[in-house]
Image 1 (cartoon, one colour):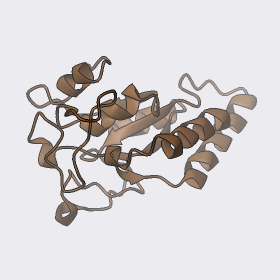
Image 2 (tube, rainbow, N blue to C red):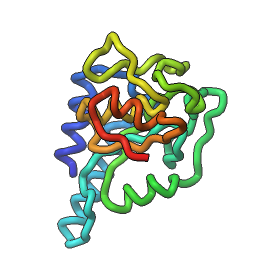
Image 3 (cartoon, one colour):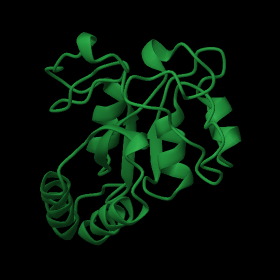
Image 4 (tube, rainbow, N blue to C red):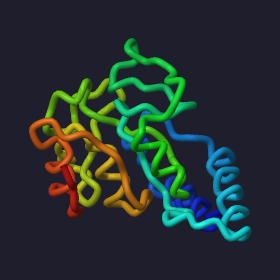
Length: 169
């Protein structure tokens, strides 16, 4: 797990795509989670997603990260993880951060965010599509193994298609 987390953070530093993230977890925190996972696996615990990285759309609660829904004045600190986040963590996946999105998930272009527009993974001069844009681009660039988004009128599937990955509703 630790090797994968380090590789993900090295890639984040190398590609320099701050448009993907609202809040990126500190590298040290992600590495601490990875060390814990490695210890648990070495002790024989079955963690099917051990060391996989994931990103979480900014309107889904991750304990320790502000939930903003793409609106700074809406931000709050959730007391617990959303159920989907908790299940991924329980399976051994490590959260990298919360991803940029069209504010309040109202858009299909990925440009309606006070945190800036999310650009296409492979064509930075083009839109990324959809309100789950940061999540899609994080996966398309190989930073995250998977990502959580939401799908209001295709806002999860559209950015997936625009960035050459699969999005499930």
